[in-house]
Length: 77
Image (cartoon, rainbow, N blue to C red; front, side, top):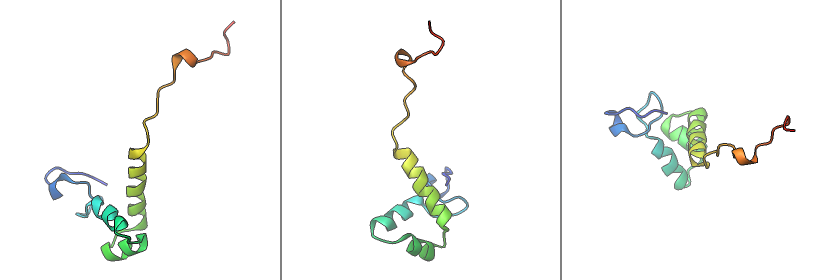
């Protein structure tokens, strides 16, 4: 995926295409299967999977840094 200012209004698109990523989500929302999206838009399963993986990672809560107060040192006497 890529977002290039000045190309397709800067929206996220599948790399080397002009297909907005949002089209994948809109089609899934309307009940299309992944196979139908592949057939109708000429995209690959890997491209769709990359979009879904990116969305899942973006929605995940940020990992918290370790709490120094709870850290243990195996060498503490």
